[in-house]
Image (cartoon, rainbow, N blue to C red; front, side, top):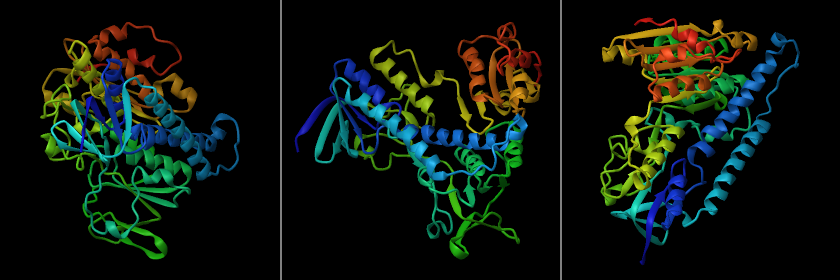
Length: 459
């Protein structure tokens, strides 16, 4: 088989891959962009775009039911899941088409459809083609984890992809895993009209978050009618009568089993690296299958890079995009950017959303540094009162002495947006006292950030 020579090979067309391919092409390189599925990766096809579209539909239905609070009556609200799905499909389709048009117009880039597998160092096979390049970029993303659990093969199981194809609202959705994906779907489906029960092995709700933040979010979701079964150590599945699915949530007792119409498994992600032939390329992976990389996304094999979810250094679209920025800077810039420079940040897109940046209170305490903490309930925010959205709280963690902002959480109206002001200050290394002196716009949620920071007290 003749080996075709390229300057760069990109495996996977998620958030980072096409951008790296485009930059290499602009530099005059011959590039192969290989993707076995639709362009756009998880975010466009099964992640950000479709799920946030569903979140928007669910919020609209929720607000319509609350019409009396705002002075109107929308009548009985009935969700047409086929219409909801059609709207989601239209938005996803337009986004995917935009990516495809972009890729088709890239200079020096050949889009190849198929599964790529390493057969030698920096050499991959796609169908009946064999390609070699000085640099190979892996951007293959991840998929829903499916660890072995008793009875799983005996019942139909939804994951974050298959649940997007539902044409009806489940009568009772049982979600295994109080993960960020699980909680978003729990609220969406509850607002669509489903009964929802979330079964979680951990006895602690959202253990990555501080106790006050987790407790408030759990209370918000429970008030909407979502039920939680935490500390479920003996999770198992079996068929029930008339097509029902029975989920064991406790090890014993009369209430050990929950019976539902649908089951969603949301217990983590696994990287799509197991079928790439990485051993033939000399690429090392960790115990979970993530490609091991240095601070610049270089793998253990010369000339092979890994970006996005598959490198285990971030599980978000924004971290994948930053991986691309780091790689491009290494190839064509000043080689001054690295993974260790970025501040951890993410959002949980429940309603209200949770925006998180930097360290948690638990992490600050473990560090042993002198620190301050500031908290404020959203009920003090005028914009939240006006909008009828007073649930949640703001929290900031500050380094005593230097005034550096160590971390923050904003659970409440527009929390996923508001938290960026604190993230920007952290990135610029601005002390919180500078924000205290700012004069923000009224009436907004962000205007309470200076007031929040003035509440700082010793941790």
